[in-house]
Image 1 (spheres, rainbow, N blue to C red):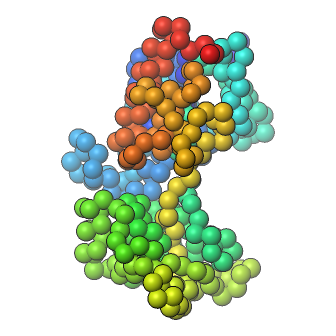
Image 2 (cartoon, one colour):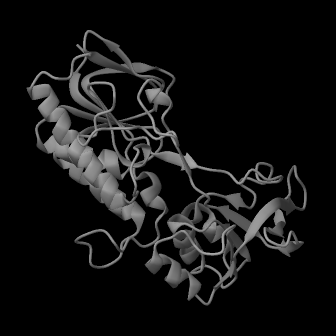
Image 3 (cartoon, rainbow, N blue to C red):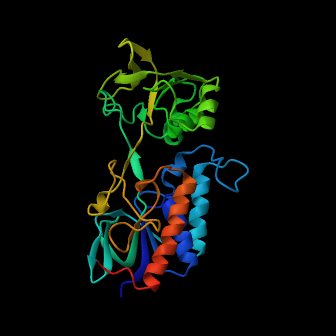
Length: 319
């Protein structure tokens, strides 16, 4: 007999893991479904230093591992695979999943929390796709060590770009940041730390128009073409790798019918409930003014609490 869960959490980033902990601790039958591995964007952080209560910086992987361990301790279960849709029958959500062994399974639940986060936005210039995995990367923690003591170009000017540039600067003393604006979009503290890092050179008012390499079939990155957005002047800058951090695209494909804002993020109420009753959203997928690990975790905690109340008060049925 299949298990009827109280809440299925899709995605095991900070939002999903916090929700799993709170749901499990509230004695809800909780299932977390993750396509890859726990942590989401958090695992890309070299030193997490601004999470309340953590005095000494920790790396994102360890932070996420601890969050999962907490959730399991409180009774949350984990399953792995790709969720292919969300259906509903007689007020019960149906969540079909493609598993690694080729045997699809469908889980059922009274409520569902979407915590699928967002994926990396691309520059969209020639060479980016061709040299992906051969010098083009979107994860400094994953690929940075391959370019130790090499010249690395970082594209972007937000929190993520500055954080990743800082991580890469531990591996090499030649990091060039390229940002299309004349100032960073990152928080002031992060931006100042980046500007004062002796291993990082910043090129403002500049965009990457092409990523070049030794061979588009089997070669590696060896240069980028830069263009000054004010003067139009172009130049080729030799480099060994290009790390791209120019924003995120919310992964909302599982909530096609839920209300979204102009940027495509899911709109929720203060309880994290979407326009579809019983369907919640938390973390980077949600429309909100500030996206950090601490806000994602808060979203997850609120969503789990609200889902519990929704079940207790019989308010999760279809509108």
